[in-house]
Length: 298
Image 1: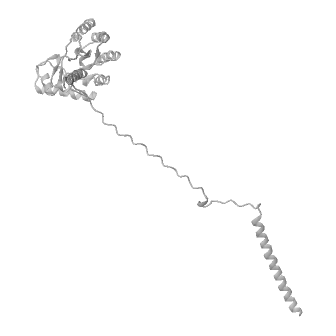
Image 2 (image 1 turned 180 degrees about the horizontal axis):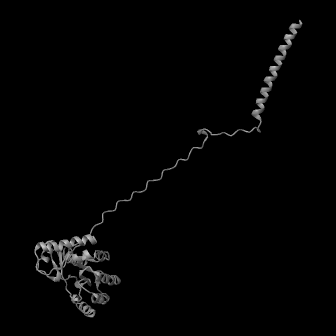
Image 3 (image 1 turned 30 degrees about the vertical axis):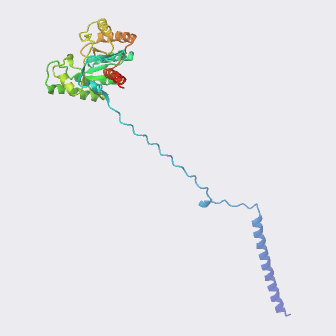
């Protein structure tokens, strides 16, 4: 073999050995890197969405329960049973209960507040026949009358006692009706003629409009301001079941009436009486009549 060929063979052999060593070294390094547990793994920054925990689904809050609409409030109505419409009543005919009705005319006025205090103290109710002119002047007192559980009635606007035309009667009664409703929210079909006059046109108009004309069976004439003892004596001596008592909360100083009332109420309660409003009194009579009729029917 020539020297030239030997040289080529040596070069090829060296190259082949070098390539073999390089490949062997690279393979060894790769294997070592994959098996070496000490090589740290770099943290993943900004991992893609598929590596994140799925977000918690927020349950939307339940819709609030819509409150049921409140039924419209029924207007407060002071009305007698149908059989008393357009009638004149002096007292009620009741046999099975000891009941009596206190009534007050000519208010509202500052004196009304004193009477309300006495009624409240004894847990008692009454009926107040108001003047339209006083309702306009003392609307807040009228509100307190009704809020305390008392009934309210119409006593005309000016308290006329002379004869009037139908137009005047209409103005006197209808304008008072408007103010009763405006200031108390109540509708009333109770009418008391000023001075008890039944033939001057006012009572006739009221009956035409289906009011019950409420008179009285006991009158201690407290409008004359007699001593409290005299007022109390008259009421206590004439008290009977179904009676309607005439008193006043307007038209002047009612100190004697207030004082008498403080004696009348507890003494009548001791005798077994219960105090009711005029509508309640008339309703009791109507109920009693109906029960009697039912008992008679086969």
